[in-house]
Image 1: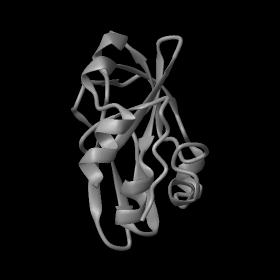
Image 2: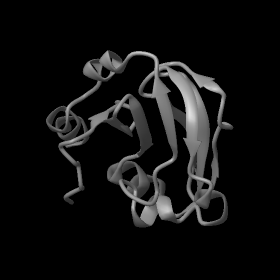
Image 3: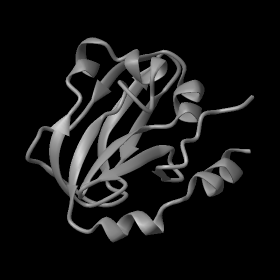
Amino acid sequence: MSFDIPEDRRYLESHEWAHEDDGVVRVGITDFAQDELGDVVFVELPDEGETVSQEGEFGVVESIKAVSDLYAPVSGEVVGVNEALFDAPELVNDDPFGDGWMLEIDADDTAELEALLTAADYEDQIA
């Protein structure tokens, strides 16, 4: 099976993606992760203003098959939360790299992204 792995993002081994734009890092889970989870029924996310640490837990995604912790790709302050997911968690399945994004972090240091997997590295990991 072939999964969408956009080249313009970095990836955690735990299947989160990160896309940086002007120091703000948008975060979600990968196409592979949503496929493995099955139908997402609940997403727990931090509040705006909370701080997260790189590779620290920031929330939970629950599906009909499993409950998985979510990990932050960078350290910083949460400046945006996709509140649409509270009423429509299936957006994570339908569009994991678009409408299914989870949070936005004002990164303390965007250089942390360099430590994450490239699209090619991530593709090798899930192969």
